[in-house]
Length: 536
Ligand code: F6P
Image (cartoon, rainbow, N blue to C red):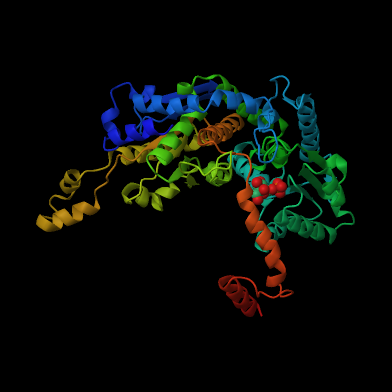
């Protein structure tokens, strides 16, 4: 299945990307989704993919039966085969899309009822009808980790201009520094704590939840009255003492890293209000419709996935930088790290056999322009090629600072241009002429050469609104899905996190000194001894 693409790559590997521009390439190698708040553009013209390469990549999705797999996902089939579950986060944003059945039962009435309950509760909190012992809520603390943290934390930051509800804080790390820092700035009599955990067993979350309960308990009689829970386990939330009217449930067909659209998004809804939250859902739904209807060559998630497969599995570039030129998307790369790497970081295919090609790429990044003054040096002149994904809005939220936004855009475009065109030795020498000569000129110029021919894609959108953020998240969710289908893996389990959890549980009593470290490997036992000795 990969051979045609590998052969094509051998033929074109040394070609310059600029040489592909023929006047129409920018339009031909980009795709647009027009919906809601304006046009969302994916430009992949600054890659070494040509018409034949694109056709061969599209053959991949035909060969693996992407259309059938996509229909199976949206149709509620049990595609998460290792956990025996459907994958239906899309139902959470299916505001007016008709019934969605799992095992012959329409799940939409339940989804919409929970959404309305969340809306009533969020409005009560925002408008001061839900009060804590000291009055209206001033601060909300979401305690959760992984998918129960990254989505809402990223989105609350991204949608800062729409944030007109109480302050929101996010506590995830079991490191006491995290919760201590947040509790220090909150009033226990005016704080709502949301315990976000699909399973309600995650050790970090439950430990932090107990710490928060004790903190509120020092100031008020009934701390649990200031708690809400977001979970699939009603039994466990009840055992923790949280009244059922403040428990917002969801079903096991919502994966943790896909869960911001439902109850796990409660902190976001409290921050921006139910109306803006619905706009966020509608953005996700617009991307779903596009993903389901657009032909492969115009389908944004499909194209984004295919470009990624070309760079990673064919060209061998193991990492990918996601570079939002949008400071409010500062947590977006971290959010994508879980979405992509927990989904597609798998070594066997669905049938348990080792993968024939590399798994999903290492995703990393920081907002521009900050990254330019940090790691871009390596991206431009390092020996490894790092494909880049730039993200940029046409408009900022600060009309009075338009000139700064224009500078931001100029920087974003300059980076992709520089990566592609580079600077030759001759050009470098020309720049230095007059300052150096002879061997010294050669030596100095060599340091100023940019090889160029480094690929990037640019995702451009009108403005970072709730609708657009919904589109962007759903774009990447479906990108992950397409990549997973082509690789033949299950993108919806995460067995790779289990071993560490088990060993941490076993190490707990060894670290606290209740049990001996004998039996552990020499390094681990030595580290335990060192840390215990230094803690005395
Ligand atoms: O450890 C991985 C994981 O299971 C993620 O998949 C999940 O998002 C996170 O832990 C938190 O899980 P929960 O919501 O059940 O607390």
